[in-house]
Image (tube, rainbow, N blue to C red; front, side):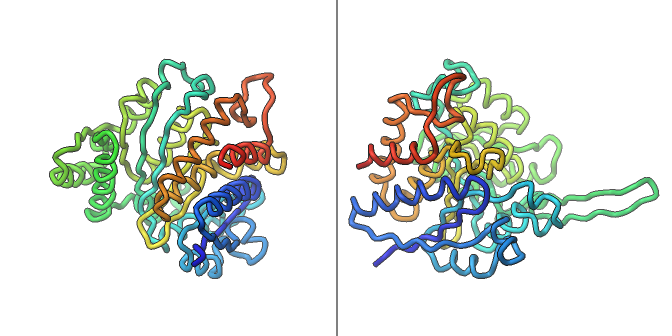
Length: 356
């Protein structure tokens, strides 16, 4: 039986990087005797242009009927002046996560040895970086009530940060479960010295920790965590945190891997998981063949591992990426000043050649 995958290229460089990852899946399918059925849908700005809305019902239906979702990126300056609820990031990504119950975003942050000199940080600081950041994805400020009110002095804007015990409990439990498969250490990131939601977060994480006595837990304020990520990243194994903190910290952590173009992600929790690179649509380089497809290809590795129970295939993809980088091949975001680089398609071809 064919395994159905919803493919949502989206906007900007999404239409360039997603095909490279699809070709990797096709190659893996042939090697393992699997048949993948790819069905493409509209999302983001492309969907607005075609249908008037960023997340059409047809796309949501396609996602629900699939076994996994591969997403490129959404957004761009063309749609920045639309009403907030129609902007691609707000009108597509947030409701997609909520509708599908994708409450946990997993972002592995590791550094291939060949890229130790590609990070903006010193080699001795970033070498050996290997962590998993788990971001709560359907609560917090992004989903709380929002309003603006006029006052005699101007306007007041309000964003409401809400977390429930159960929302915290399920993400904490996932963090401890995944830590047991790694090095057994969880760092829970909050702002409990200031925020009531963070105080609840810390209390619930401590409560869940009692179920996992073999895992070490430490708490860290988000501002300190931001500093520690660039001071001593090897101290981290699994980081778990709320929605907005996770959004910010994972972008910062991407620099530890050499480029945000290296950061894969998986959003899980519902019946179907979503896989996407952590970078955006990069409209400034769209259509130029400069985009790095590796994050999307590594996201496909996560898909094979998580949705299709093919850890060996996932490992082969990572080894192929490592081998290509070890030979000195680079995309534009990874190349040193004056160094030549491979195009999006060329990098995809090199990785598939190693796989084959």
